[in-house]
Length: 309
Image 1 (cartoon, rainbow, N blue to C red):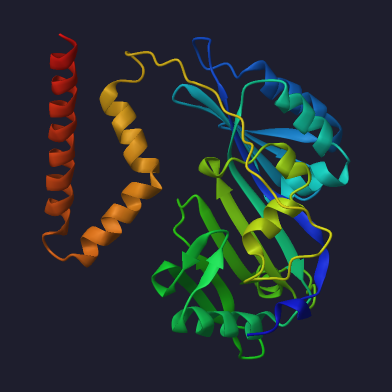
Image 2 (cartoon, one colour):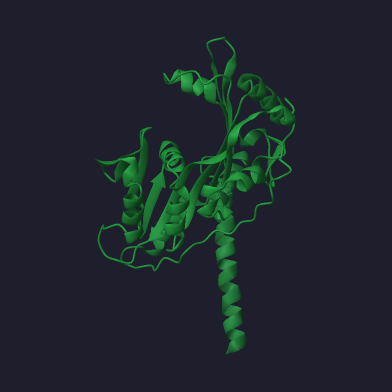
């Protein structure tokens, strides 16, 4: 594999996507006040409401998605929107406003571009993972964790992207040929360019200020197996904020909560993967083990109550 220290970064790591949720105390579909505060702050970039909770913002066709989701309000900014916000010098002001209210960072993409031969890098990375493994943060990534999307470029070289981790995993690394992506979409050729992108979800503990200065966060997960760690970068620590949703039994029943937890849980996803490896009876094994755990917890609680009595 190309030595990590041969990668030439194009600029510094940046936040390429940011998604937040805010609690909703009021009844109805009105957004919380912080949403209007942020949209007002970004007015100078040019904002156009496109309908269905979507705003177009900035010179690059960026999108802001703002809509109710259950008992929270979802607010997300695309990479192009983040670029406009960053270039206008508004990112820190936006983060400071958001930091004043209860919120949760539900997804943050920290990315960095490199002026390097992407097909060569991807081929070497693919071979390395097929033969062994690499480490992303503290997670060991092996061949079964890898998804490949290979195409032929204009020079008849195999290129595309390698995704490490599932789409809903709390940590997912996406390494792809940015030059090929830009050219295939009809944009000007930026020259040789590889993008390494670390996609992080709420379990990781990112803060909104990690979107302002994502260098430490980025290198915490990408170095040393995907790129070299600069000596000047200090260690990153999780410090994510959050909030407790006040559940309304009519709006959010136990069944709805279970459905939400099962749909979003990386642990459940891993259980399913193991069940498939176990063969035809794998799913029944999961059900049996869950039933035993449920019954064991019930018996333990009954025993405690008996001792108290």
